[in-house]
Image (cartoon, rainbow, N blue to C red; front, side, top):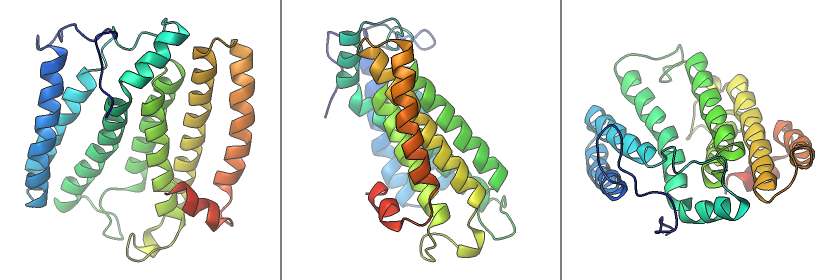
Length: 237
């Protein structure tokens, strides 16, 4: 498990709460411990509140002094190593929080014509926002763990919406639109991440764009192909 150490700029107190970095980290982990039994007991609204606290505590760890876009290459990679665990956790919990929200609202009656919680347009908005944030994290903030975790989550949604499985999701409710948005979102996040890595390593903007674009062209073709189930299976592992 990777955790921030004293070499990284994470000692400042939160401007809103006055809590130290360590206090906010402790709150996040405690909220996670509370959420598990609450959700297992099917107290979904209470679990949503706990997850909101969990997510807020995690997001507060990524303050302006941590996400410095003007860090040197060595500092960027030190940040990536020190915050890998927290970045993956925060990126994934953001997606999980939206799933929990759809679950609670769906149980309250917000369902489409197939009795699936939520709607396709609402889910599409969430996918775009998740992808946009991940692109910024990968390209500007150089938070590669966050962007990679988000891309993995988007690929999971792409697989769910394009590979029929009656156990996982109603076949008649599959949305090719959501699958397309998820796949292109994952591609965009991949481009942004490669761009950020090249820039953090000291490469020029043009070199970063060229490298990212070349990788994106290949990735986009594979993501858009629905005739390659072996590739789909490999991306879900």
